[in-house]
Image (cartoon, rainbow, N blue to C red; front, side, top):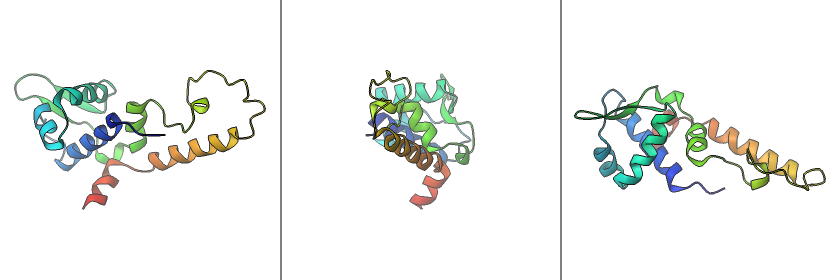
Length: 136
């Protein structure tokens, strides 16, 4: 499993919002400059986060984005699953994957499933608030 820039940038942005307190709307341009992310690329990430209900968005003058929950309510796992689609280590265990013809006799399948559970448990056990504590 390799986390893409989309997943990494989404986490950075969510931490950025949490650092600022989450009360005021932050314009896209300001976020892009602060995080060193292309405004166009960030727009696609923010659309994903907004459509999923992770952030509130206001368009027009004075608009921008902000968290709509406390930093403790966002897990790293939920953000990565949203942006990455899957955190599976191998394709045969990812949700929606085509059935593997060897799944009935695959001796390695239980290991891959255990790894997927470990990854999920790890990322679901870390919140944005935890990431803020780590950086202080």
